[in-house]
Image (cartoon, rainbow, N blue to C red; front, side):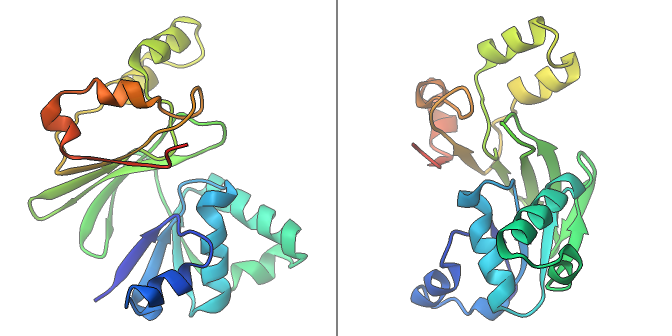
Amino acid sequence: GRGIMLDPPPFVQSILKANAIPPSIIESIIISHCHADHDAGCFQKILESQKVELITTKTIMNSFTRKYSALTGMEPDLLKKLYKFRPVIIGAPMIIHGAQFRFFYSLHTIPCIGFEVYYNDQSIYFSGDTFYHPEKIFEIKSMGLISQKRYEMLANIKWNYSLIIHEAGIPPIHTPVPVLAALPKNVKERIILVHIA
């Protein structure tokens, strides 16, 4: 089989081995954004493994390259030789290992992506680090800080996915747990909360 990792944690190779997952099956990594708790394991993986495919937007990839070039002293061009970049186009369908992904920008302090993915009759929604709070997002729109279209995308999640992986934490840069706790029971049964602070 082949695998995709999302925002791998530091020491990811050890975690994979401890769970009897051969690190060599991980061919692709999705980077949601460039905060260390989301991209440090990715950098470690590209140093320790065969050339891996990094999947993200050009904006996030450029941030990743600048960040790790500055941290390591490696020239950006040398760093780029360690991985294969596959650019995400926001809103456009993208096939990865047979599954159809659709990426979007979440609402966070730096550029951050989430996605929905479909494979056969199953679907997954991944929020990315985001501030999901429809009433507060409406206030942001009312101040003219985001467009109507962006408001609708951020505030009107469909919730009909087979599995919902949603982050939660301290607002206003993360989603307050009570907002997710107020969702209908049939939605909460399909949610896994991650990144809980």
